[in-house]
Length: 429
Image 1 (cartoon, rainbow, N blue to C red):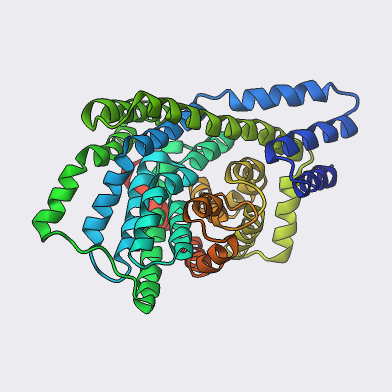
Image 2 (cartoon, rainbow, N blue to C red):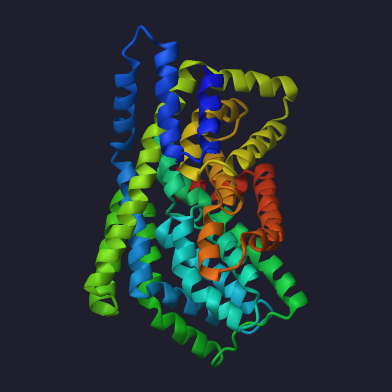
């Protein structure tokens, strides 16, 4: 059955059928062939609907809306201003400002493509004006945006929590340190490349007082991640409620405080968020059904036995799983990967003594890197549309950035406490 499921899936993907449709079709055909005595088609349809009918998943459309409202109201530009003020005129300063802005915006939207769209439209042209090549500016934006779903709130972490039953709040707190580590690694590489190429930052308009003034001017934008994360970790509201509050705050701020959000902008933000959500929820339903059929065939247990037959080293098996997810991340989007492979690999890693929160954060990091690996590198395609550089030059420029992110993933595999120490400190484990 597994051969039919995966064979049909990859055949349909090769034929450029959308992943959600390919998953649903493969699941339906396999159910009809292998369970002819049961009314499996109806069960498949029911499972697809019930998988998406989840209160925690309601956070997804609202976090999407937060990101689109931030973009339309100009609050994203405020975040960029803070990043520029902090990084200053050092080599690669503007690129470093972009990465800092990605890290701040990550604590607002939870979506990689949303970060590229919100920040790239402003930062990529600015970097080109400062002498950066358009391809490098685009690839750095795409790589920086991979931090978006790692630093909470995170849409893939919400999906992992729903799929595995792991606490989403614990996942959120576990993603903070790895996200900062990813940002630090990208900043270091960017500074090295920029010094070599002569890319300079934007001169500051003054000293420490001027920097603090820029932070103060952006206080309404910077307050949003504090409200969202502070409310979640303080036990005031759930991640879903935090998403709703964030959307209301972004709407109120754009209309009444910044006064930059027009009726047309509000409409565009809602439409864009709705379209992104519909696509994602269709994937959630069909991928969940696909995963349930694999579980019926005991595929997770077979994979575990196969890996244990190769090596009994926990780190070795974890690196094997990460390598597998790197490959699948090149072809399948992040949410689909989470739903498909969490039931397969979670029993394996927990049997080795790893905490489910650690695996969930590590899986999110790994799959987010897939956002800049073709052919399904969503961040790359969004950045290409903004930078207008060719895809092959974007891919070439992203190689050292990809290598850096893989090194960070390797460090986290070897030192699980990077993920677990903050959840333990906050009491979310």
